[in-house]
Length: 608
Image (cartoon, rainbow, N blue to C red; front, side):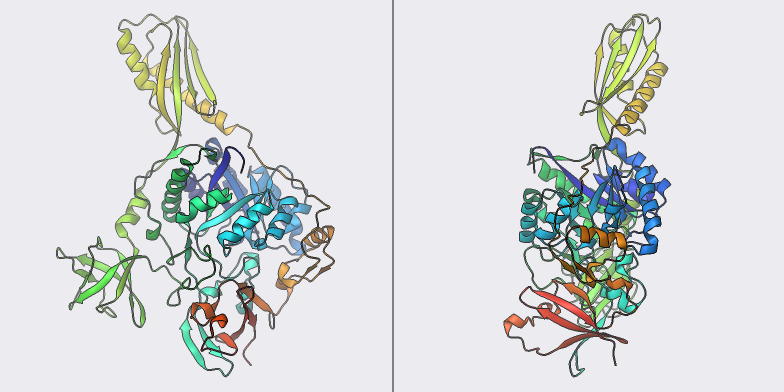
């Protein structure tokens, strides 16, 4: 990264309200879905709402990205182009796309970001995309730190990395598991999340090895402790997952990562934040208190076991302690705690998980739950709903402010009030008239400072107030009028600054790293096919989503491995040998293990 590289905290938004909360909580950029063609079908928004979010965000220098990250069918191309142009007209700074068809639509004036759905895993792939018209490449979540560094060395595009939230167990954009169990496709924004369901693990003789376990459900990502390494490796955008999450989640998690990143930027003068303004939370951010399926760095430090949650795909919550005594209507814990009435808890016993609510906590620390079934000495207790913390989030009045310096210029014939922010943007309000010398100059100056320092319900926080010229008498009503007018003009000046966009042109002579693409490359329309053929791909299979049946196909590939998770890695002389299968109802998947590349695949085989 060059001098003064901009570092971005990127937050999700389900809708306009969530987007505003993300901005207020300290995000440097927000990604949000348009009215269609986004990978979260349930998080669609009108172009008008997105334009409102752009208007709210722009004075802070916050960028807005629209997600158009599904594959397109041929008949959808005209509507997809209309949608993209609507979003550009709404003022978005970038389109996050999976389908390269958008590069063939002549969409000018907007950045193109290569979605993680393009399965961005190798230096060759990312290097190609950085030269093919994409300003930014969003990396696959299953990469190791070493792989990320090698990719950084291979390209000059901005790199975006997920640091928090849910993980797709299969490689992004290469998972068709949902299509095997319904018409809903993850590549079409309607994933049914079959990876979160329970399965039986069986062998070739149909003997059950594990029954009813969530064998594909991995814990959620938390790389907050690895931000320093990622900054030093050249990541410029840190992404929080969660376009279906509520505003409490957004407020809490964004505020937390804002603090983490700001502390690291303070140690790196060659880096700077990508937007302006300060967000002061009126609560103590704690990501473990928002929806989180446990915490994992996944494969950041290399492939390893211990990243799955076989017992439940739900949020277990923050660990509180272990049950050390049980009575008829309550239990005690082995550690001090702050559990309270209204909290939701989850207890892990030998048989699985038990959930309940807290009715009361007695002065001696004994916890009285709504029900006692399954609670025994030795159970681990987690809190998955902190009632008091949730109330704090819902009542939070956290807002984002930009510091402005005020200057008052006085003369017998004119009063001018000006405000300026750190980047030099300024605005003034002036009144001409006959102004008499103040009888008490010191008191008048104090009044001027006091009134000019008020910012009310604006986006500004006024710091220094300077007074120049002979102190004349200015009515308080006029001071307030000038202040409101000047601050409004300053906001308009900030909003009116032309957006800085890193636009790239496609290098038509750049060859794609491969000359053949199979059905998992998601080529589902003529514009996408033309893009790849223009870059030297000779053989292209139609995308797998176009097929009526997935039978016999490899429908998921992942760095995650069930054998490794069970301690049965084929490289380590396992006791569990032979073919393995996942089964659920009528659905059966044969597991393939590529030990040379440490990958597992699922091949769909319907039960006979």
